[in-house]
Image (cartoon, rainbow, N blue to C red; front, side):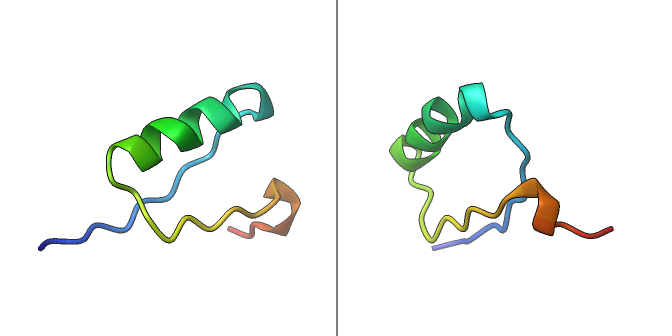
Length: 40
């Protein structure tokens, strides 16, 4: 089984719909952080 790390940014209005679609595609170990905590 091959695993891929993915980083994404989603607007709050699309957040839950996006999360559900990712889970339906087999995504796991989803970490959600507020954008204020991100650094370049």
